[in-house]
Length: 151
Image 1 (cartoon, rainbow, N blue to C red):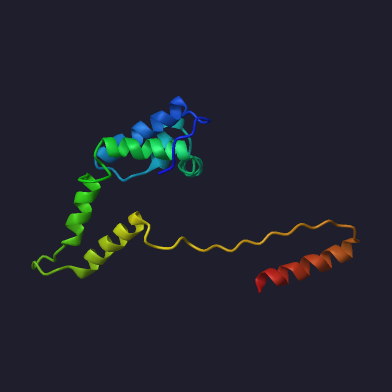
Image 2 (tube, one colour; image 1 turned 45 degrees about the horizontal axis):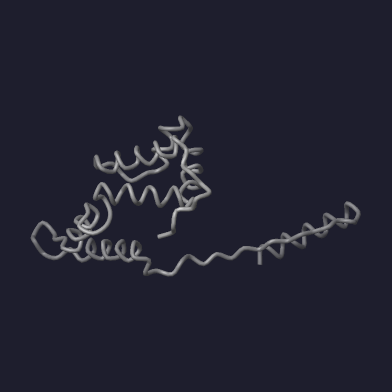
């Protein structure tokens, strides 16, 4: 886990988002930082989702949230999440036969949590263009670049 930096101190609203997130998960609701952001900041869902994503990229916020979840025994060793994952690995059908599809889903989830899978590969392209051309030359260049991006 990343060490908490001394540069960034959480705001009272960020701390409230963490408290709300932990409270809602502890009460059995789906884990959703975005829903907590929506509630605390009183913003629309789309704005809340963007804000939550940004907050989760902040090491201090994420570390504080993870610590709070561990302190409430929601994640970590002998936690609620561990118990649910253990139960899922032993899933059975109504006839008490092993439910391999459900067990596989739980095994995949455990592997995601453990970081077993390689990160998603993304390809990005960037271009810098200084223009000193006529409008016709510009149109031609835009068409060429559009065709290149489609390849």
